[in-house]
Image (cartoon, rainbow, N blue to C red; front, side, top):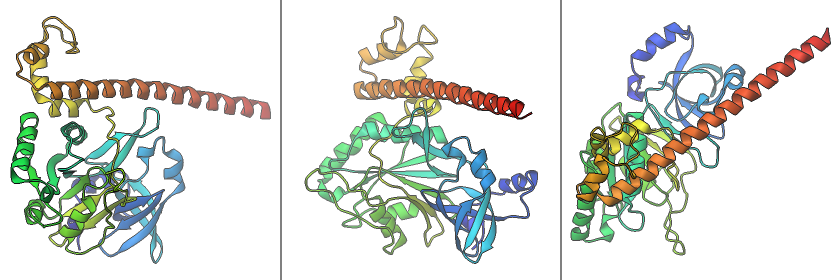
Length: 355
């Protein structure tokens, strides 16, 4: 196995030289669970921990390693390494952190494609698909939509479902599969390229881990069933994990996400809702909110039924979330800055009192 088989890019070499990291080994984070890491190298997999300097200089959770990261390492035991630095991330798929004020949560890094998995029964929701598309577009990651469990519906129902997606979402590949009958699995496999990294996204119970097992052609990821009482997926994948398929493509499985909160994803929203973005340039006011302004091209198109009402409603909801996140993130930054200044002032006073 070579570094390129793991998805390594030549541009990382210049970074190693620039920061004098050439004496260190190179590895990729393949799993992370409560700051316990596994790193894959060209030779083997290692347990890993970060060095103290990396820990103490970290200002946010995003400064810690994440699955998909390339890292500079040194071996200190037969099966253990120390992580000294994180290489610049080519792409970052992230969402608003659940329950954390103004923070973001990294889902995975250095991703080329995202496989957005939805089941065609109770999980199917175009609004949620647009949320996933927004975070993918914001990261510069190419999305592919996968509709699973098509064995539960008729071909006519599937055609209607596909048509409803195409009405609101264009130019995104859509693959229909069944983990039960294996229909469409070979089609998904044919889309996966050697050396490219793919990330599975979706709610609990949509079949991400089962799909990964089929693509691996062996059972590695734990799978679960749908709860009979709540009809919701049970959490099975407890942490993110990167695996390499036989054809050389790289997949990252993720725990199911109940919430897909939107952070500072302005560019992602603009791409996802490109129809509204194009109309915005024709609005009378540059700072038009597309809610009540006279001369709003978006509202005029909505009145003429040229854009979908549900798409418009979802756009406004996600835009409000994005704006709220930006304001809370700014407030958090101000508080952190004030706290940092206070700590420095206390240290200065203690130093003066010493003498």
